[in-house]
Image 1 (cartoon, rainbow, N blue to C red):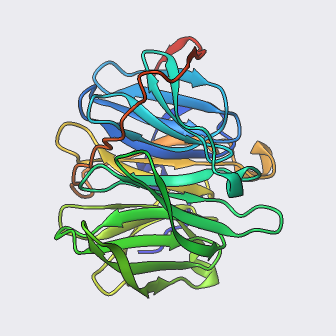
Image 2 (image 1 turned 60 degrees about the horizontal axis):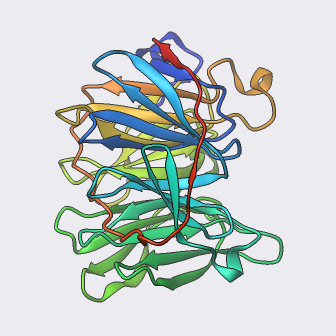
Length: 311
């Protein structure tokens, strides 16, 4: 299905909240709170939306957050600039990992918890250095897995937990690795390579039928891929720079989608930077919780947030 995002059909996607996000990213359903969280990376903001009440709000303002996970205790684990990792609980930020020396001029971009509660976390390219993929382990140690990545992005685990999808956006490729909870990832191969007309693959998520979904930057849509990596469904959005997606709601049938503006809101469209929702297109699967210990002796600092808004 190919639909022009400027047509009326694109308005089937609801605009849930528009905070003018320069790079809205990392939508993630919090099953304990029954709320949807997402971030605006350059502005260092995190938001949450309660579908039961229609209320959305900014709940964090600080350093850039490229991605985050939900911890098993319900707090958020933030992956920030300079390779910093911190825990956010009740408005207090506690440092878990001070920085990664090689990432001092970069930031994290997209992360995912694995079945054991470790976190796979990618970084952006910076001057003279390409992006990397790391794994943060349960003892707080960080391990380099891949180098030479142009733009580290969407990840997902196959339903049998024997495969791992990983996206390099600027290469226009999504890779499939063998995955073993004991040994990690191996046997990298290209799952799908996108043509220029398809846009750039960005964030990713998996549905209950084992199909991978990807947000397509510059193409104004999200796509569902079949088991061979072919596009079998496209859902249009009323703006072109689509960044990421996740399933939410009590039954995981609401598909939440983030977007961005790159040049100006005028050029990228009035909906650029908004959070959208498509309903009833597929059913998702629960994301794994991260289980990274937070040092009891680590210094904590308070964060700021803004007023709530009603849809």
